Image (cartoon, rainbow, N blue to C red; front, top):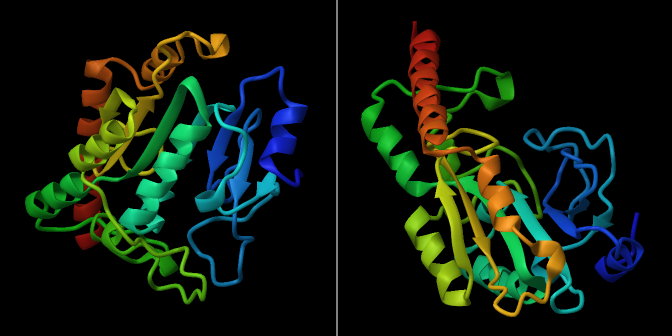
Length: 244
């Protein structure tokens, strides 16, 4: 475990510096896994932390030298913050990313949620006792059945994909990919957004083609369409099974 992000960077300066923000119980090897909150008894949505994060830190206050990070990734984290808080975080991410560095985010997509709510008169539900709730509508409020004094389980703002991308562009990022074919949680309902800090001077040689590498991870257009279509079918079938 590291005391600061600068310490982690110093000890891994010969590698790509990749931050996994809000890691929870999902520890990724070769990444700097960061979380702010140890598991509490009331947590029912994060899983058990078999491995502790590399760094305990509030991602709203990430601090390190400018142009130090190659990749920043968060899966279903930013919706746990208010809109203005996310914008301030994104500005900070831009500062600490190296030129050519990549920002990868996955989160609920308000457009996808509203479309599914409209198209599906019978809603699919989680079947576990503590998650017996609507898979779609629940994204509007998060794990609000949990009593938590810190409030981290709750969803505080759900972004539209276009809205989120426009904010990133205003900050200075360049779009690599925005898609509903996510790697985690529920495709189509959610979104994956990949943006890059410009590297006009080519000062960061390690970041060469990082945008191509990350775009390939999400497949071509046909693959992304197939992933979302299969998910919609599964949601319909799950809804019917739960009802009947």
